[in-house]
Image 1: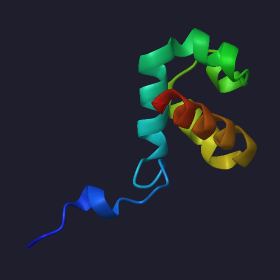
Image 2: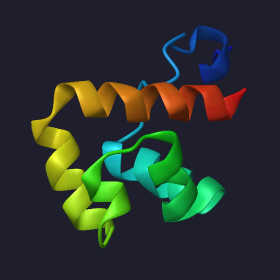
Image 3: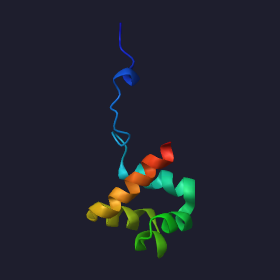
Image 4: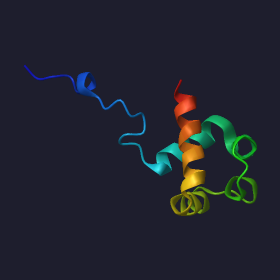
Length: 76
């Protein structure tokens, strides 16, 4: 009998989720303006785009942590 993968799922909600998927989901849920209000960083406030945001977040651990935390909160 094969086991359902959800039975042994990793408890980490970020496991297997790319940064691109996280930012895309947040933009779909909140929009750039609200995302910039919730996390006031320039890549969300000034001419936001997916590519510029990903580039910034990959280089800036503190900002990425805030984005990941908002994503986890949005899952609840």
